Length: 166
Image (cartoon, rainbow, N blue to C red; front, side, top):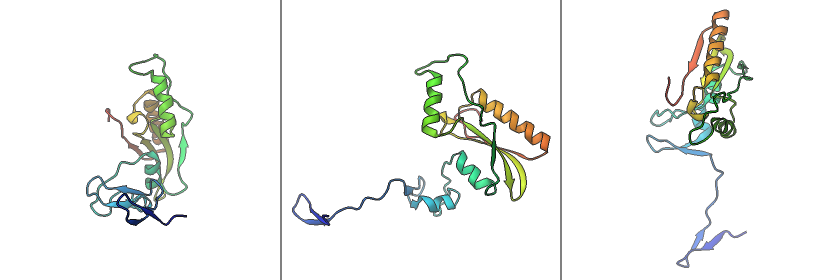
């Protein structure tokens, strides 16, 4: 293994070590370089300046609900394209692409769980899924979550993160 290599000027220089991608993140506000795991342990808030990083539904569930209490529901509801909508792309293709790139089945996820032992219903939208696009399934999941909260008399928490309608 070569520990040193020649530069253009003929000088000996130590080879650069490659670090795995994604270990560090730069704060968008102060420029501080932050260790990603430490940032996650601080609820995605910069320890230097207090900047709040954008997070997804998985992180909201992890941060808000007591460990092991999250129970998803209505995961079987998926977006469809009953109108055959098309602009620059077919909507059904956008849905498939969003599922693939985000790893999520829909723009919102619904859970029952506890916060400090108190039962709650949580709806967490995710901007990674077509900018939190509010298709028919988002509305249906919110309505069903509200029905559960009303029936059980539990607080309903909705985290909205869509690109337009909030």
